[in-house]
Length: 66
Picture 1 (tube, one colour):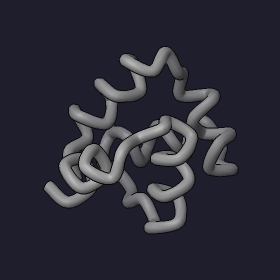
Picture 2 (cartoon, helix red, strand yellow):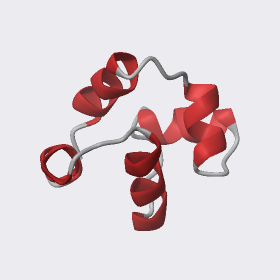
Picture 3 (cartoon, helix red, strand yellow):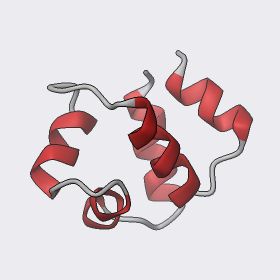
Picture 4 (cartoon, one colour):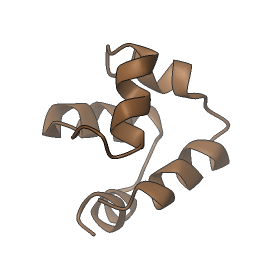
């Protein structure tokens, strides 16, 4: 998981952690914990987040699988 790349995509898309947390139905504290590597994302959360951020399949692969 390439968290710095994901953080960059969130910034590029003009989204906030509050919006991203809502998109995956998690609290901001939980989302922040996931974004800082203290807990893991589940596959369904990554799928929902990718859709919310309008990520291409290539972006998802480069971000999630590295």
